[in-house]
Image (cartoon, rainbow, N blue to C red; front, side):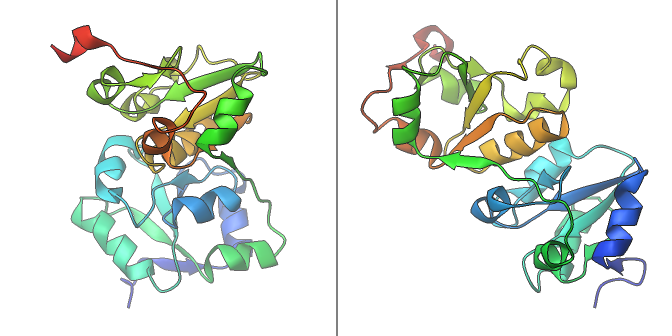
Length: 222
């Protein structure tokens, strides 16, 4: 059982809770592929199937109570992982998960997934296309898409680090494999950026795709 102070919120209760309340944040721990297909607006993605603790410690805002959206039956496990990392502010979870929210008619947002082949086709023709690499500096230096902006995921917690992005640009985000890029996309959604594409398969797919120019920053590797 979940600890007594963790509530099982109905969709209506959660909607009322989030309506005019800046003290709560929804953390969605489903898989990246499931999250991009549909999520509660304003949710922060931190998939249960990836390094959730690492990114919770680095990115979750202090002082906010957490409401979890989890895979079926994983409410206690996800809450326990966060508690073990020092997050004792898990207020509860959405009863019935995202499916209950969708069935209730709640508002839904989504992120468009594209593969590396689609990115290769779009680069020459979309004048508003901006590629954003969210990997660590050493990963970026070892090889990246030519002209890609480098904004490490860990830096996206500070809105000042993404303020130079244009809301009208079509932002194509990638990381190594597609986990961090979805976290980044959810952060950008929260900040009001909507023209987003998540490159599935990330760098591992991009570097094997024809039509994408790859460059290195050798000086940063020395």
